[in-house]
Image 1 (tube, rainbow, N blue to C red):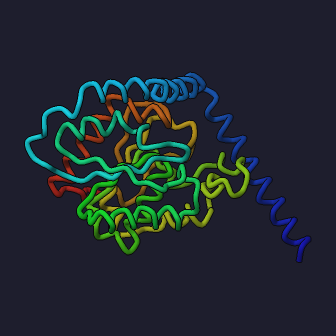
Image 2 (image 1 turned 135 degrees about the horizontal axis):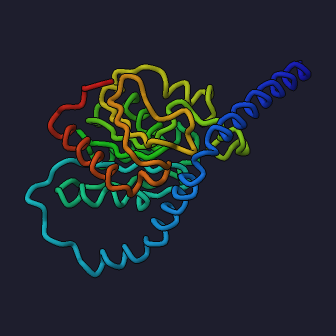
Image 3 (image 1 turned 90 degrees about the vertical axis):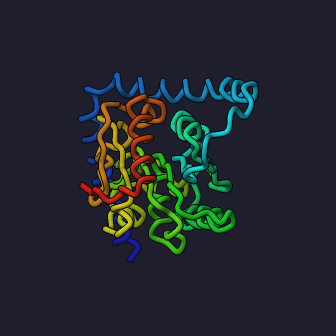
Length: 261
């Protein structure tokens, strides 16, 4: 029995190694995009203290003409809601209320814990008809919430660069870090790929090249939008993506969330 398990593990490891090698080779022509992607994330985080200071100095600003949608931010692994601030600022200026969920543990906890944290947040705040704004693994968390007991509280979700099909690179991480579960074929990815009525309420925005998700971010049954921006992290601040997010939220506010492709 033990020998059989070891042999099965060895076969899985060989398969994962082949997938990683194939994806790395296919992405070599995009090395400039890899570099630019990490630079965009570095600049986003380096600017964070200055952005916070500028926001405090500016004060609350004029109140929007009316309160509109509640938007709940779901960041990706090792991210915080502040990493999505370039996307949420324009939405806040338009009168939408931005919510940040506590106790997401950098999105490294088991999915059941992450889903429960979001569900508890929605219930305790008595939020309903919300729009989820998610990046990377945050989109997987969002779909779990939409399929769960509190799913009726969610009007729709805008997901950016979400690994609906997993990433072979996840196999490189140590078990238990919350990243390895994103490998193709894992129970988490299998659940994300399973068709569900909530898919029609998801707008999946995907970059022209994603160094972290070679299999792409198209989700069958959802509205899939390609943007001319390469990079997994560059989508957090690129003007075409900001415009696409605003348009998707406006569409959901108008009730048009079922134009699936």
